Each structure stands twice: as C-alpha cells, then as structure tokens.
Amino acid sequence: MNLNDYLQEGSFVKFINVQSAEESNDLALLGRALSSPIRIEIMRLLMQKPRLLSQIADSLDLQLSSAAFHLKVLEEAHLIMAENSTKGKGKLKVYTFSRYKFILLQFFGMPNESVKKIPHVVNIPIGDYVDAKFDKACGMANEEALINEDRPNELFCPERHSAQIIWTKRCGYLKYAISNAYAIGDDLAEVSFSMELCSEAHGYNNNYPSDITFYINDVELCTWTCPGDFGDRYGKFTPYWWFSESTKYGLLTTVSVRKSGVYLNGELINKRVTIEDLKLENGNRTTFTIAVKENAEHLGGFNVFGEKFGDYNQSIVFTAITDTNA
Image 1 (cartoon, helix red, strand yellow):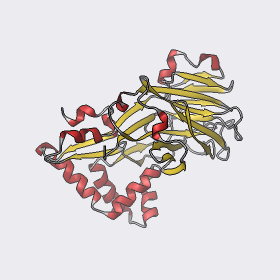
Image 2 (cartoon, helix red, strand yellow; image 1 turned 120 degrees about the horizontal axis):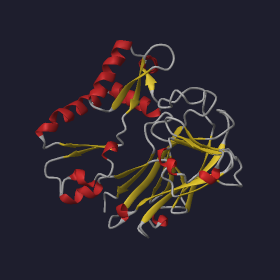
Image 3 (tube, one colour; image 1 turned 30 degrees about the horizontal axis):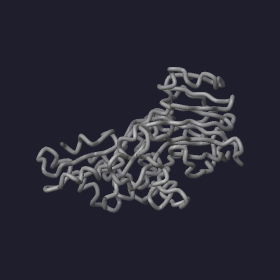
Image 4 (cartoon, helix red, strand yellow; image 1 turned 180 degrees about the vertical axis):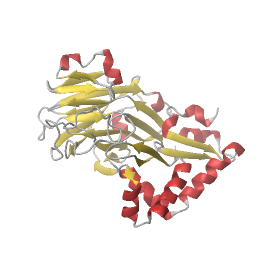
C-alpha cells in the first residue's frame, strides 16, 4: 500500500518520495528553501500571523528586494502562500504560512511498518458539531450571509454545516465527533486539536477575557483564558460584507494531549491528564468540546472560526501521531 493511502487529509500533509524522479524538483526546491537561516526566520514570522512584504523586511532588517527574493524561494517550495488583498488602498500581497503541518520524506528502503508513523489528520468543519448549547445571545454566519442570530433553538438547522463563524456571548459549548479508527492497534504518542478562537463581547473588545475549557471524550483537559474579542482590523479571510464593528479574527490555539500531560500551544500545563486517560480506543468515536462554563470566572463567551473567516485558512484540525518507539 502506498503511503498516501494512509493520509486522511492530504491538504495538511505534504509527501515527497525521494525515489521518484518526478518529485526531484520538489525535493530540490524544499532543500534550497530550508538552507537559509533568514528564510527559516521568515517562516517563523509567518507562523505567528500573515504579514506584508514591508512588515517582513522591517522585522528582519532586510532590504525590500532581499525580502522579496527569499519570499519567492519559500513560495516556490510551497512553504508559504501569497494572496492579493484589496483591503485598504490599492492591492497588497499578503504572505501567510503554508497549510502543511507536516512534510514527510520517504527514503529508499523504508520499512513497511514506518507507515504507522504518518500522522492522521482530520479537518472538521466548525458547523459539523453533534451537540451544542448556547446562551441566548449567539449566532453563526457563512462567508456570504448571517445564518442565525440570537436563536439558540435553531442551532441544529441544516444550514449550520456551511458556517464559517459561530459565537455565544456568555456561556455554552460545542461538541464535535470523529471516527476513532486511528486509535485502533497503534500506540499513540499525541492527539491534538487546533482552531482559531476568541472571546465574544458586544461588538468587539480586544481586552475582554473569557475562560474557554477544552474536553476530549468528556475528560476536562484545561482552561485557557482568551485575552479578548478581536475586531480592530479585518482578518485575512474575513469577507468584506462583515460588520465593521464586530469580531473579525482570533488566535490560533492548539490543545495537545501526550503521555506526559496536556499542552496548550506547546506548553505543558496539566500533568494530571495523559493520553491514556482519554480511552481513545473505546467506542467508535472521539469527541472534542469547546466550552465556557456557567460558573467561569470570566464569562466572555467564544467565537470559533472556519477557513473562510479570521486570520487562518483552517477549520478545526485534529491530528494523531503514533509513538515512533512502538
């Protein structure tokens, strides 16, 4: 079986077969792109947020022509993306980091068992929740229009599947479910969920904390205090028709569970819950819940963004990684 057969969402994993003559150019472009410390610094900048050419040049003290050269090399290797933005005056090119979370190289003689080490990645549309409960002040929209506003009894309308932004003002939760086939027969090292989130204030308020709690299989993982509801500028993917005094972008947030505990954006914050506690192999699904508890200290609600709203071209991304020592 080819390694690509094991990839569930190829848009998030780039695979290069070193043995394939057809992929030699891709491999050479990747090697060239990664051979420069400056280009690696540019990638790190774009992992934080999208930027203009001038912003990248200023951050790294580069001439515009030099920054443009390095960006072209990275773009040719598909490590970054560039899109024209018409927000503001004139057209500006905005650079953002690639959607790829992993780049995998297959070398000559790779044993068949190594296919188990390929991460299992699933993209979950934000409207595909299986359970939900919201405060009265809530709503959702897709990239073209509002779907529902302040009608929590309509959370399960069929149109929800097209949602690109969903919000609740004070408390509430969204629960998602995926198949747990990935957990059967393998020793898992890590599972993670990545998504763009922010608080939900009236209009927007960049300084508006909210205590957002995450669960996997109904096991409480951690609570993140989101600093605000961000609307001082348009998100890179937020549509033009969207209300100027409303939420426009969030923060990319990743919750991971390993054998050593729970990590929030790469930082270990809870040693009491480990991947074994999640019982991922039980039943036929894995659930993930985003919630603000009714008794939270900061009852600031939440917004969750899809790939066509906010700053990041993704919905909710689930990743499972097999233990390389298994």
